[in-house]
Image 1 (cartoon, rainbow, N blue to C red):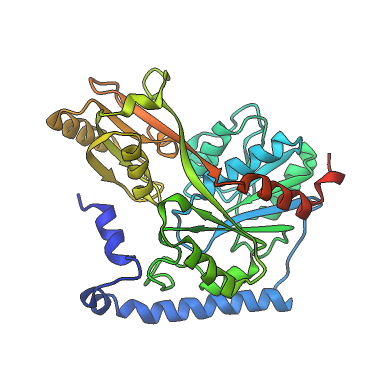
Image 2 (tube, rainbow, N blue to C red):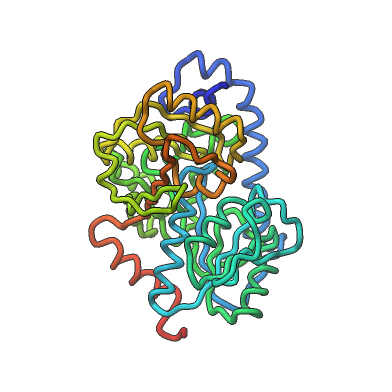
Length: 372
């Protein structure tokens, strides 16, 4: 098997690319140029009113990014939903349902109490959010206006959260939150397919606030802020980091203390957009990472993957296999064997006084004092 991590690193390396890589990938530059022209033209048409935007009869908070995955949108959506719920604000999450089999105009993954779809129908991210968020409906559908209207009609929510909504311009929003990975904010600076950018960095000007994720792992936060201010001079910037919260055994669902990883010889595997952050979390918890297998984002694990991982684990004498909470919903059928399978849960935490400042910003934008 060719390592997905090696392929993605070659295609989408950071700013410091070798001359050889630049030469090999140069044919993609022309495609990126045409892609970028199309993106700019689309934004221009929406801004000028040539393309129609529609509003929902509720507040709309959009969470998105400029790059192809890896910024931590899903856990931030969970944080935002729980934050609003904690303040007594009823909300629903609207997701596209990427990689799910559901093809209707909109569908309900959970009504907040009962799961109404399985992971194959919903897609891994909406299913993950449905399991994690209690009392919060989760909808899927490409037409977010339809799913948003259904959320208002069926659950009378005064606000909805638009998951991965930065590029979903047909729907008006009251708050546009842009997430940027502090370690690789703009990849190699190229638009897709030469790079990971979905839009030029200058489109950050559409954001009402920027959230810098994995900020504790970057040494250039102030420099990055200066660059963002070039595009969005008046945009507030907040910083968050991943904080491990618990470990649980996939086999018996037993909750384990984080300390169990200290000096534990493990084999880790994941299929998420930014696998390196997962590895660093494990190492920071004191784990001895004897092997680290990466798969493409949203990868559906197959029986042969399980067999290979278990065999590698036995050969290396590991004490446990471990993966992410997001991966865990795609592990149906993983055999209970001699080696336990653990799942690491993480959440976003604001750095410093950031949580209080973000809450004040959020409520001021949504005028939450008038909402129930």
